[in-house]
Amino acid sequence: KKKERVEGTRGASGRGCAMSGAVRGCAAFCANALWADVGARRGARGARVLRGAKVKSGASERVRARSAAVVRMAAAAAGGAEETNPYRAIGVSESASQEEVDAAVRRLKQKYAGDEQRLEYFETQKARIFDDKLRKRLSGAMGGASVVRESPYERRQRERAAEARKIVMPRWVKLLVRKPELNQSRRAGTLLLAMLIGALLAPTISQTSQLFGAFIAGAFLYNRGLPEPVKDDYGNIGEVRPVKSWPLLRSLVIVAIAGMLGLLIAYLVLRFLPLPLALTPDVVTNVSVFVTLWLACSTFYVQDD
Image 1: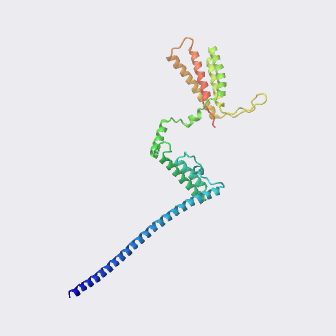
Image 2: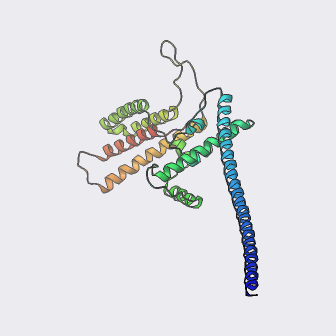
Image 3: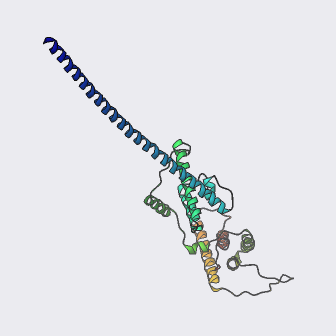
């Protein structure tokens, strides 16, 4: 009986071991199947990532190829070779600012409004220019720190301050005053100097000399800016020009004011400045009047252009 019990125990143990081995084998099979499924999923995910990277790379390559094709087509449409310099392509220098680049591209777009290839070509060159400037600025090759742009309000304030400091002459004053001409100043000065010498040599006719000097200055002032009259072979004037009323009136007024200003200057000099005995009142008055008449006919302009 003991032997039978031992043999029964051994049989049960063998059956138990066989069953436990079967269970372990099943568990191992399930684990292997699970890890295989996980590996397959990871492999599929990696394949998808790799495939997405390839798609993105292909899209980038297609964009670059399209940009290059646009450049070639635009260059072919322009009748020349492909322009590799974006600055030269839109007609600006490499030191041009962003506003200048925008203005150049805007003008080209207006000129080629109906050509889509050219428009895309200009946009591509503009983007290349901005990329180049950004790369230079980041690498420190732009030559100094970037300048902060002033706002429109600050610009208006600066322009208003500059206009307030600037002396603006009225338009009629700008038209009335001109730069002296050497030829006319020399001729008028010669005649007025002769009249001044006559007034100094003969003080009794000084007022008459001043009157003739005023007429001479008025004539030179009226004829300033007019073309030379036509003359014949003997030097005689061959035409009679009509007299213009407004220029003549301006000439008379300016000459009269110049004469009175000369008399006022002579009075102030004689009144407040100590002069030597050789400078008599007639000498000071004649010199002051003739100098102001000469300046008036040399600097003013009365003709209507």
